[in-house]
Amino acid sequence: MKSLYEPSQSRAAHHRITGLGSALAVALTATFMALAAAPASAQNAPARPATQPAPAANCPAVLQHRFDRLQDEKPQNLCQYAGQVVLVVNTASFCGFTQQYGALESLYSQYKDRGLVVLGFPTNDFGRQEPGSNASIADFCESTFGVKFPMFTKTTVVGSGTNPLYQQLAQRTGQRPQWNFHKYLIDRSGQVVKSYASSVDPKDPSIRKDIEKMLSEKS
Image (tube, rainbow, N blue to C red; front, side):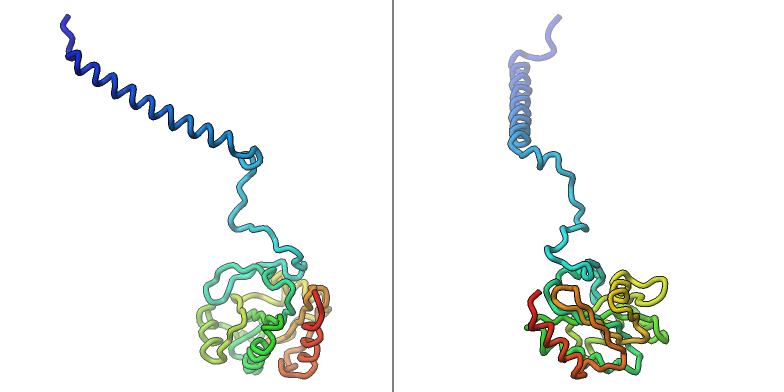
């Protein structure tokens, strides 16, 4: 029977197949060599979830918590404040103590370069005086008081739904917030926590004295 292909066509097809086979062999060889060169530990180690970064070194237990940032609701690890003096305040936009925002920002501005950070936690727990959205709270704080210190999304600071940070602070001090703008001051080591009632203004000499003392101590 006569061949359906001319000899020249058969040879060309043969060369094309041979060329493809050679390219595939080269690619497979390179892949195997790369795998062989990788350390066994790297090949076998499980992937670490992106949402679970390694905890910061020397982060005290009281700061080992995550909260979403008020402005964009992105998760923040409080361990980033390890080694600083931390003033924690539960806030509200429609409270008789709301004017304390100005004094808190003044404290932050005055002492931040020495290691003080103020952390604000809006809550609707007392008198329903923080009914707005996170976006509206962020706008109010910035436009009314020029707040620059870190603020976090609305949370619960008393009752059955109390967030873990406030549970620890209450256990450490024996005092839970009774109203908006209760304050907790944490030293650099995270071991000493002081508590101040809502009525104690951030400009009060007792708070400033404690801040100065903690800032002068090493973590």
